[in-house]
Length: 620
Image 1 (spheres, rainbow, N blue to C red):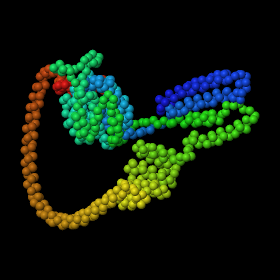
Image 2: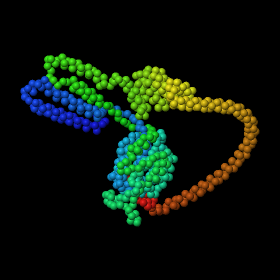
Image 3: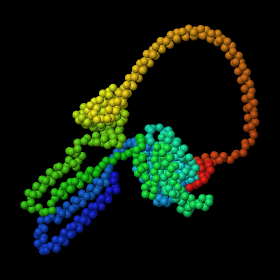
């Protein structure tokens, strides 16, 4: 048992509130009756009112309120597991971890705000593979995955002090992201859009970001840049012990260092790749704009994962709640007397009629809406882009409604989405028997599209004309009809050209046969000459073989001399063992770090890369 919306359980607090309200109301009524006059007279006047009935009605309403609160929380139970393919894109988040990201012009700091906003973005993603590039003067990477919690954990405790080199190397970060996306492409699969989300607050200090953007544009990788911070510049904090701010960084001349946002550079990087630039400030970070930009990109199916689908049980709470409401509505507050028996029977009959009218709506059947459940489920799956699941639902609908043109039309749409055009043509052909003009016109239009996809241009032209006859305002059918006619002309021309080529080939073949006959005569003469040459060649081969035998004897003698020299060398004492080369020491360090976490391993690699180059001029 689980709840799909557990946050709505606060509605159950309304139950004790209602109980308290009823208690206060009953107490106030008693006090009011006491103030009216003689208690004996008042008791006689209110003798017909049943206090237990009033309490029962109040209890029924409180219980009904609790059942409705639980139903809104959507309890789910049981369920079944199924494999589901997720649709998404490839996203690399390049997050700046330079010291200037500790500035507090954006609360609580630029870096912490960026992490929080990125976590919000992760919570809204579904099926997208996300990787991370943490960069300053050097980069730390985390490979793309759909496990968003692992990505959040990687950057959650990361800080500028963990970066082996200071500075802001935007170009190096972009190249790391491009490398990861390129490896994903090499692994195969369907083509999907690939994006780098760059979040930084400063200007590039040493790399070449525009050249990296050109490389991304060649690979059709879009870059969306988010500039964090102020345009005027902000002081760069200096970290002391326990990573606490201890003043501000100064340059060699003793002046305070400020970090300015280079919006022009970030805009150029985004423009080169067809992406976009956003500026984040204290009020608006731009997560919604980033999400909207990503929503318009192409997504394809990726890894299949096991998803548990639960059964809804909230209906079992709504049914007793509605029944209790009917009972409360039919229950009076007066005591039954003999003269009221006829009225009570009439009230019972009314309640029975009312209950009979409500019963159909309490179950799954709806007399107003006659849609098939399998069709509704298939339509929902098609809307979500799950054509395989929709086809399974439409198969059930066709089995239940074999003569319904709408069911065949829906099944044809699912087959068309799966590129099974031959089968979809048969389904659309059955749907053309519909009596409704709009459905018939749509069936002919989709039938024509299926024929067009199967390169049956003659049949497609006829179907498009039928669709236009039923719906002359269909501009797409007019356009596709012209396109089909053009394809038909190209096909006819191609067939005619092939026929002419075949005729020409036959003619050329006859000429080639004649040439072959003449050539055979010449070959016979050449063969006689070759036989004479073969005899001369045999004598020459015999002489060459004698020379080879002499050479083998000489090689054998040389080999014996080399063997004697090698035996003398083996008797000499072995040389002293040399120390390991620096490269071997680095390799040993990397192997030792394998025992630690992936984050520690990535830090070790970044430090080894940093040793091989000079430190940047600006380390903030």
